[in-house]
Image 1 (spheres, rainbow, N blue to C red):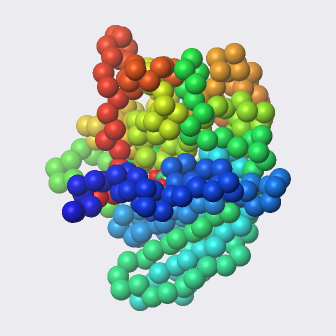
Image 2 (cartoon, rainbow, N blue to C red):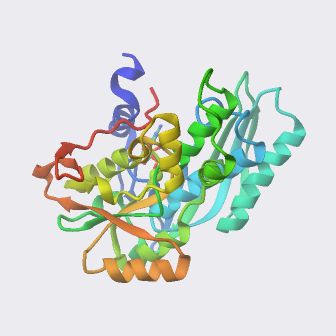
Length: 342
Ligand code: ADP
Ligand code: MG
């Protein structure tokens, strides 16, 4: 059977069936943002790995080595954040083709160390091998979380509000513009002035996961379910709904899409909504919360981190399905067209 016949998520489900045996030390295994396991009777360890492959996740013509290092590190931080925890230690393995110089490896590690300093973890090991063609960076990040702060994808309850931090679609807008600069369209429109897309450019080149916001949402069980938005909003809403055994409605006009994302979408003849629903790598948080807790949480997060949170939908009973509601009130199934390997 070909991989494309079952797709990335079908394959992960198949692997889970084969090896995903749980024992009493495993709190969350395959299927959440990170694995959560009891390290001792009063300590939960979080484990995650997110691999970066040249040509799939980055392009050396677009990203500097520093930015590739930063991105590799923070993708993993974002998954630890989504569990409500704090990153502690990383192992980083690298596969290096001969086209990479020593100085470029230095730069890669400077980017990773900058992320480690920003998010307070240490790089404590790894592995170094040659690669026949492409550069591969594979960090494995270990974190910690108190039992009371652990947030899974499966905790959403009918009646909860579905919320997101910050803005969505910006990373995809930035990437689309960076690709346009690398390979300009023949007879295309005049280039968009730099200051009309500099913020989304930054969002793509140096994403900043919402670790502090996640901790505030996790403490005291404020967020019932949480995931980081790494594959596009549509797919990540589906992950929460499926793991929680619930339905969901998302109101199109409530999805926070920034002005630069809309401007870039207009310039490229694309849609800002599509960037938000199906574009990857925003590294915002998607979570559910009781409506009673929303105003207090929004205020506290704004005060302590400067980040806005938006209520974009509601958790429904499972029989209602997962739907997108247009500004006119039209309900359509929320399709997932985000990035899937294979
Ligand atoms: P995320 O986008 O949050 O990084 P993924 O979609 O990469 O999550 O993975 C979803 C879940 O599947 C995670 O729990 C991850 O650990 C698990 N997973 C992915 N690939 C494999 C694999 N090859 N073997 C075992 N578990 C895997
Ligand atoms: Mg994740």
